[in-house]
Amino acid sequence: MLLGAGRIVAYVDDINLRRAADRIPVVRNRASMVHELMKVYGLLELMKTVPSSPASEDYVKLFHSSDYINFLKAVTHTNDDDLSIEEEELEDTFGLGFDCPALPMLWSLVCHVAGGSMAAARLLTSGQASVAINWCGGWHHAQRDSASGFCYVNDVVLAIMQLRHKFAKVAYVDLDVHHGDGVENAFAFSRSVLTVSLHLKEDGFFPGTGTQDDVGEGEGRYFCLNVPYKAGLSDDNFVELLKSVVEEAVQVFAPDCLVVQCGGDALALDRLGGANISIDGYTRALSLLLRLQCPTMLLGGGGYEPANAARLWTSLTASVLGTSLDLEIPEHCFFERYGPSFDLAVTPSNRRDQNSSEYLAALKSSIKAHGEEIQKRIMNKTPCQEPRYSSSNKHPCYKRSDETGSSSRIDDEPKSVLAFGISQHSLGKVPDSAPGTSTQNKVSVTLNVDSSDLEETPFIMTDDCSMDKKGCTKKHTVVSGASRLKYSFKRQKLEEGKLSTMNAHNHEQNIEDIYDFTEGEF
Image (cartoon, rainbow, N blue to C red; front, side):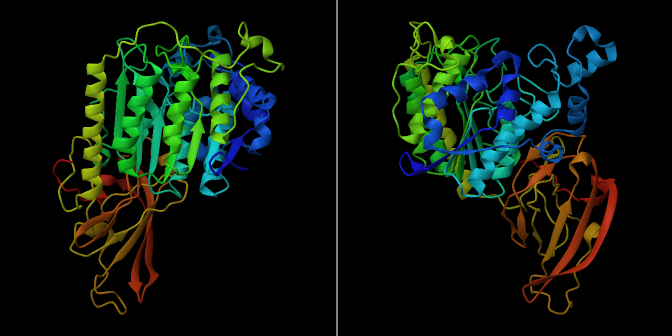
């Protein structure tokens, strides 16, 4: 429906999705509370409501490891006292425990949560919506091979991967009071995804990461921005910090699509929070982001006072729709949970904002400098012939070892793909005298890799590299650093603008046997 400054707003809702999210112990019944509050305010009638379906195992495998997925599928117990020592060790390995307890039908929960954000991504990639909302999503702590921080699946990473099929550059802005470590780690090597996290950073506060020195790695250096604030952050300071982020970094990056994690635990008085922000502060912050006027996905996340999270996300939905709400909450099935005030307001407490003017000025200065680094990397792409491979991190800029010009494009299908420089002895050369071959003698190579074979090293994201004799000119690639893999390739030649297959082979061998790396530093 066309509302709110001409926005086409769609809301992902499915009863099975809500039931799955409601089962997460720390936010039990929160998803239903959010839905029912929006319903009683009449917001569902003002936007397109779209059902979701559970994600497939193959979809979840695009980010999460097979070992982790197999473990989640095998979890059936509900009582830790029934576990053997071996089972307890497995739970520790995969992050199940105090904050992520084993739950009955855990794999079903994972698939439904991932499916909700998958549906939101499809709304944007298909052009059915300019703003897609999934308040059941936003589980930003889950790692590739482990649960963490109440998060069993990283639906955010999976959704961004799906968005990248349509949108060349995606910006992710995390407003949760906790650092969005899982999303940052997934895209640490990517220059196509800008990850931004504004979060509380102090000793002992989970997850303990997200310093200003964490700026990304390799090709993705400076495409990760952390804004760590101190306890008691107020509305005005929160909005000013985000304004600086938008103007100095996000606008410089110029995203084609935006994902906003609207974790509600930065609200005042959240039991696992530490900031002092009101609903008005969040609304002003979201307004700044919506001014970017690009397709936007809104996700939930933290928010451990369920009534306040429902207040927040209902208010943000109304803001996106350009409508106002009565302060007094209408009676409905969860009405008693909103006492004693029974209104929409979440009022800041009297706690002191520990973010001094000097500290905030230093943060803004750092954000500005960070944005300048992003600008440099956008304007001055380092060509592939410059050595950027370091044997210490095993994430190279890939380079053709022979003198033949090449054009390498990574398959954009939703599966894991590995791309490195193809050596002459692995691919061979198109003969210079081949009839119809272009003067640049281009070779197109596609590597299709089963994600189940990429288990030995972390899944990372970089860009795809199109290369000619002058080096790397464009990047858009999904890369994994597995030390052993199964792969297939097709060698093709250009004949009067048409590609013809020359040969195809299937192999399984060590990367070191098939790829030549250029030594040097990123």
